[in-house]
Each structure stands twice: as C-alpha cells, then as structure tokens.
Image (cartoon, rainbow, N blue to C red; front, top):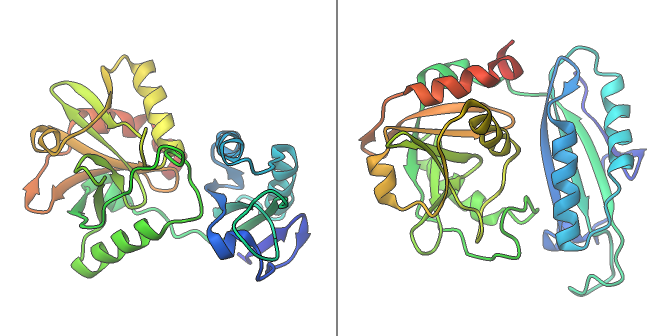
Length: 274
C-alpha cells in the first residue's frame, strides 16, 4: 500500500519546525490497527485522545479527527494498515507557555508489519529494564509525545536481545512494558498494575479489563511488587496492535502459558488473526 497523511485536513507530509509537538513533545498520539479496511476500536482511541487532551488542555475535535480517518481509510480497501493520529498544541514562536497555542492534527496511514502468530502462540522473553519511569500523576495514563523513557528502555532490550522489556517506576513497582501493558495471573486473580503515578492506559488493557468482568474473572488493579511477578502463575503483555502475547521468560525466570491468558486470547483472536 502507499502511505498517506493529512495535516490539519490537507494532504501533506510535513509540519512547521516550530510545532510544539516537535519542540517539546507537547501533544498526544494514538496508534490504531486497521484490519481489512476497518480501524480497530477507533471510537475508543478517539475517546481516550479527547480525555487526555482535556487533561492537557489541548483543543480536540473528535468529529473532525474521525472525518480525517475516514478520508484516509476510504481508499485503503479491504487491506491491513496502521492508522496514527497525532495531536499537538500547535505552533508558537518561543517559550513553554501554552496559552497562545491552538492544536494541530496529523493523521497518517502506513503499512503494517503483521503481528507475529508465533509470539501469540508460543510466547515472548522479557528483560528487566534498568531505565525507570518517573512518577508524575499529572501525566499518568496519558499517551503523550514525550517517550524518551520508552526509547531508552527499548534500546536496552534491543541490545540485550529480548522481545520486550518490563519497566518499573522509581520505587521499584511494576508498571508496564516498553510498548505494552502487563497482566499476571496470581493465586487465581487477574492482576494489573495501577497507573495512578505513571504508565500508559492502553486501549487493549481497557478491553482486557472489560472482558475480565464479562467473563467473571477475579480482578485486582493496584500496586504490583516484584514479589508478585515471582509468584505469578502466568504473565502476558498486550497492546492494540499485537493483541495478547504470553510471557514465557523474564530474565532467567521461566513462566508457563496458562488458561487465563488463553481464555482472554480466544476473546480477541478474531480481531488480530481472522
């Protein structure tokens, strides 16, 4: 497929050098899987974007963004792709003050690297990242454009040859992986780290939490210590592009692929591999 992008509703592939998203990471983004021409959980992505934009006081019109997405998808046909939405606070001459800025929107469509069925079926190996997440409740849960912590953590894992990396906060609590959220099965409960101080509240994480309630699974969201990881019967990671990947190894610690992970995979398999 041919990539395409809209900048403030016009076909373009460049932005101003003074854009605050480029200069300061002052903005938000969503990465959306397109399967057979349909954007997966588009409404949920737009809703999260709007909620996060309100927290950062960035103007956001989801109807306009939905229209941009529809324009790009119209020519895609029944193909797979990645749809990305970037919302920034716009362009200003100098300084951090956001008061005079309005938002810019960038919507782009690009080729997708097919999710690995092998990882879905056989699992992945995680390393433990030395890079820690800073605790900042004002930004907790938000998928903002400043991803330097994730860049550093992902670089660690790439150099060490791991599929993904587990990231802790500065107090040593488990938060997420470098590009995905993490779940565990501990003593019959599905456990997910709280994101009150840092981390990204992923769309796939939200879908799994909702599915767990529908399925009647015992659910615990809260502080997760490293001891919980050692005691976990199952560990898996997720995001809205890869789906759910079981974790079979964390550093030198081995884990089995268990029934809770497989049950949740069955709930979502058609979204990713049908």
